[in-house]
Length: 140
Length: 78
Image (cartoon, rainbow over all chains, first blue to last red; front, top):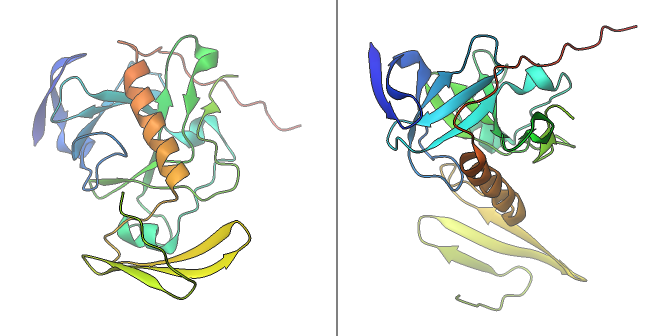
C-alpha cells in the first residue's frame, strides 16, 4: 500500500509503506513520530528522513557501513530490548544522521546517535562503542 | 529547579515507578543508580545534548538537494 506524504522539498510523495516508519519515542529534540525514508538520486549514498507529519522537516541520513567500514554498534541491554532488536541483529537497518552543510569535506555523520529500524519501527539509540564520534567527517 | 540534598544510600522517587539512588560520593564524583521501567529511557546529559544538537543541525543545515556523489572507493587491501 503506497503512503502519501507531503514534503516541501519533493512535493507530494507516494512511497511504499515499507519506507515509512513509526518512531515511537521520536528523534532526540525533533518533533513527530512518523517518518519516511526518501531516496535521492540513483547512486547517491544519501537518503532523506522526511517527517510524515511536517512537510518542512527532513534530515539527511546515510548507511554508516558504507562510509565507515569499521563502524560498530554497541547498545546497552536496555536499549536493545526497548528498540525490539533481535540479539543477532538480523533484519536490523542502521542509519546515521548527516550534517550536510557547505562543501562535501564538511559533511559529517553522527555515529553516536544512530537510528535503528526493525519491522517498520525506528529508534534513535546511543551507540556505546568507543570512538563513536558525534561528528565524524564523511569525506575528509 | 527543585533541589533536594541526599546522602549516599538515600534516594529520590519520581512518579511512574522511577527511583534515583545516590550510591556513592567520592571526591567530586557522585555515583547514581536509576531504577526505572524499561520504557523510560535514561541518558547521560551530555550525550543527550550532543545528539539533540546534531539532529537539529542536520535539519537546519540540510540543503535543498543532496549531492549525487557516490562514496569513495575503499582502497583495496595490500
